[in-house]
Amino acid sequence: MKMNELFSKFIYKKISLAEKIYNGENDGGYNEIVLIFSAVLSSIASEMWPGKNIDRKRFVELLVKYTPFSLKAKYISIPVLWQKFIQINDFDSQIILEKKYNLKGYQLLTDEEIDSTEDYIFEILPKLTEKEIRKYSYAQIFYEYVRSPIIHEYQISDSADQIMVTQRDVLVSYNNTLIFPYKRIYFHFRWMKEITTSLIERLNSFDIELPSELPIKWWIDG
Image (cartoon, rainbow, N blue to C red; front, side, top):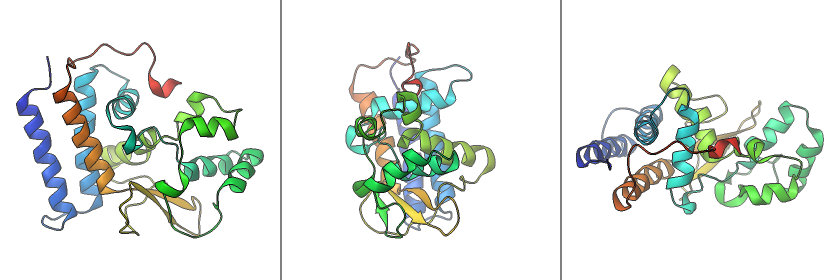
């Protein structure tokens, strides 16, 4: 069956609640907002592909396959990837990114200035596989750093941030810190809202049956 009208209305009510919190009309803060969006997106993913032990895969699949390219769910976070190279002592890859981007500075970075498609990452870091690169996509990072910890521990990961430091109309920004991780990713309200609303519009507008067959290969697996 297709997504029914009651389910769509339920989701839009949750989006409205998150928007009221964001605008200061209801009690709560960033944690409550991401909790709402995380629960809504997870519920859509489970409706699309029911089953056990596939939560991360279907969550990421939903975002990368059913949202507009302009929302960058497939985009690769350069700062998060760079910090991974620091963690695993991959000095060569770390230097390649540092030569391409001003990662050691303290200027405000956003998705518009620094993040990129996986095709470009392949060009500058050809030794990486698709599976390795896709671990650093917005969809996967949101799941790992925000969705999973907020659902299970009611707090986001230390690698993400809940403080908005710019009013610029961007999707993602990076907060600077003096301790590792030096650049903590912040997912803006606009990104979460537009990702969710675009999914509802897509699923309601196109002839997409729910539940769908499981993919032969999940996007996150390369």
